Structure formats: structure tokens, C-alpha cells
Amino acid sequence: YLRGIESGLSKIRMAAEALRNLVRSTRGIDALLTAKQDVHAVFSVLGVAADAPTQRFALETIAVLTKNADCLVAIAAAQPLAYFGPALAAASPVCEEAIATLSSMLGNPKVVGDCLAFGTFLHLLRVFARETERGGDIAPRARAAEALAKLTADQVHGSRVQIALLRFLPA
Image 1 (tube, helix red, strand yellow):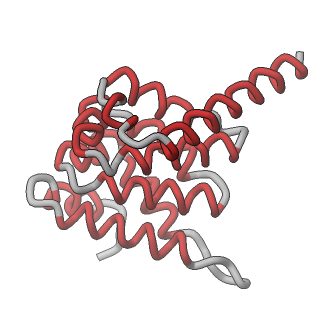
Image 2: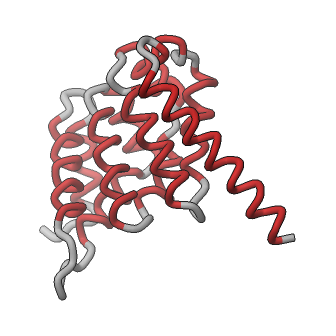
């Protein structure tokens, strides 16, 4: 049973790595991935919480896609932010990359609204509130603070994000 799971996981990892390499090396390929279903498929790989390399490959692919305006519109239409939870709860390198990728998408007001609707801001708040004592890395905490600042600075949904954050932060 475990061999089947490991085999399937390695195939998913290889597919995610191949997609990342294709998107990175082929100029203009991101323009072909502007359909809602294509973007949703890339984001669904983030749900593989058991394998950090697979998550990193997916995050690197998404980071390239967010540079294309049409892809960003498709990302906003697909509402894939529910998949960011496992990546934000992962170890530091994956978490940092997830926050950086999320930050690059926060220029779109629809994505900010989805962060509010899906509770992604709570994951960012949890990363920000983690203890960094005993020589812990402060970089994820700083990136989470930057992402929360981008969320609250949004013209459309920023005030609602501030009200939601005030429910969880002390006055």
C-alpha cells in the first residue's frame, strides 16, 4: 500500500517539476495557461502537504504565472486560495515561498477578497504570530507582515480585512 502512495507521489513530483521547468524555460508558455481549469490544476498540487519539493515546484510555477496579467485574472477567477493553507503551514522554505507567491497576487482586488473569504489572512496571521525565539528564522514572519500590510492597503477590501484582523489581534 505504501509503495503505491510513494509511487504516485513521485509521479506527481516529477509532473510538477516538469511543468515548472517548461514554464520557466519556454517563453510565452504562460500565455497559454490562462484558462481557469489550467490554473486550478496547478494550484491543486499545493494540496500535497506530505511532499515539500512538490509544493515548491508548484509555487515556483505559480510565481512565474503571476507575472502575466491574463494569468493573474485567471487565478482570481479560479479562486484557488484554499490550496494555500498546507503551503503556509509547511516548513520555513516552502512557507516563505508561499507567502512571496501570495504577495505577488495581492495586486488584484479579487484575490484580496478571496483571501478574506477563504481565511487565508488567518494563515498569514498564524505565520506572523509564530515564536521566533531560540534562533528561529524571522524572514517568514517579516514576509507575512508585508503580505498582511498589502491586504489592508487594498482599496476595495482593505477596510474589511482590517476589521477581520481586529477580531483576532489585541487592541
